[in-house]
Image (cartoon, rainbow, N blue to C red; front, side, top):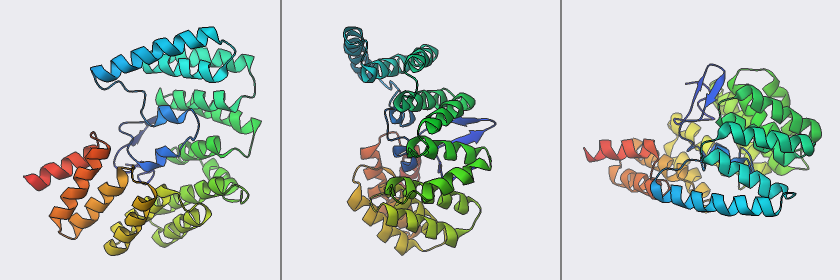
Length: 290
């Protein structure tokens, strides 16, 4: 598995495509802090009949509103998200492309198109839209962060230039933190653990609520048998974000490593309360109980 820190356990890079299999890693919660994040967080999936009914009703409401207010871009974007959700990925992307032609320079449209294209396994098209968004505003970090991640997965050396640009945006702590975070991911993949930990520390300093950096640093501590330090760091992350299933999962991993199965089981179960489909936690619980 390549780029494992970025998509730890849950995703895989195959060929030229980024196959989004089961997005549980916290990284994706900040991949795009725009409307496009809905795609990347997997909120497009209708997993049961209840959800299908809900999404169908919402789609009717949004469709009606989009017709009533055809000049409202947020509504039009939401409507096309519903089209994507209901299985017409090509129609959704083509519809947004027409809107982008009529509204050149709209970063929200370009980011949404990039996110949909990535979800649709068209990495090249996603890169195209991300570059367009960056051309409109080189200092907006959403597109840069996403593009750097894709480039790194493809081993495209341009990821370093984008990452360095992000780290230098000191007036934008979130952008800077994202840059250091990506740097830490790559350093970890290169087994440069101490440097990776330093990069994650820099991300936390720039943006102290950046939970992803806490988690990735904790994983490094876990991997290097600094389990108690990892636990302390994960508890700090949990104080910041009580809704992330990754935090209790890794607390479970730490306590399992310390041979405290009772505590480990408690955290794995906590993970499933936050995300009932977290496959790694399901597997761990099954092994402990059998």
